[in-house]
Length: 353
Image (cartoon, rainbow, N blue to C red; front, side):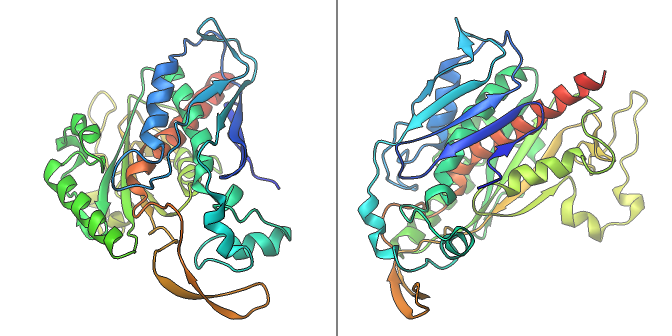
């Protein structure tokens, strides 16, 4: 199986399955001498882990990280950083009913057709549990990028949307509610809506917005390695993501050039930021902001027709522990992938100099 690594100089390779012994990864290219706060890493893991509130999957995993190499006396040594996260609360029998059939809108069918054999327990390698390793690497990247801030939040759940510009939101409110929405009123509406959806045995999608501040000018290349292209790839590699847009996004297609152009200030900053902090594929020093759309979780607690290995139409009813809405736990994953991209491009920029 290919495609288990991300990045060029700051590179993450991950391994493990949802119901295997452990997940883990190797981070290659992290500079030596970076002070590592293990508590800060665990804080990020706690934001992603299951069982943290009434509106997420009730699988109970501590998601404690054990580092095997690359960190000594609280600092990175420059050698590959190896780590594992043990799985301690698997309930593999919850998936015995899909051993010979395929869940609608899951990777089950295509995985088996591609590889000829699959781990059906929780989706195996296709499970969103793989993203735990990304959060570890992203937490380390954030500590390398200590002057750059990454702030993601839930901006929509189903039809409930935060329309306030991010500049007018109080980011300190994000961690004060289970949804991770900076608008307390909208957060309460979203939480109630998710609970109603769960009672129906259904799921719902949502949107995560991310803002990256204090990014230096010059990250990214003007052709194939545009900064926004790599951010898009990073976000679209996250399970359940269906869309990515940065800056004005699709709304920009409805504007005139005279409305959309970001006019300069004498210091090189711009009066508006429809570009989303990236022009010509290169960071321009303004805030980078983008949105990521997540589909509803495919496993629903309702009966649906599907097919088995022999092509027979069979009835399937979802079982196990699943998120009714994935976006509250996706917030730290979005931040982590953004940090990996910026860390990689910053090292590439330094290498060119």
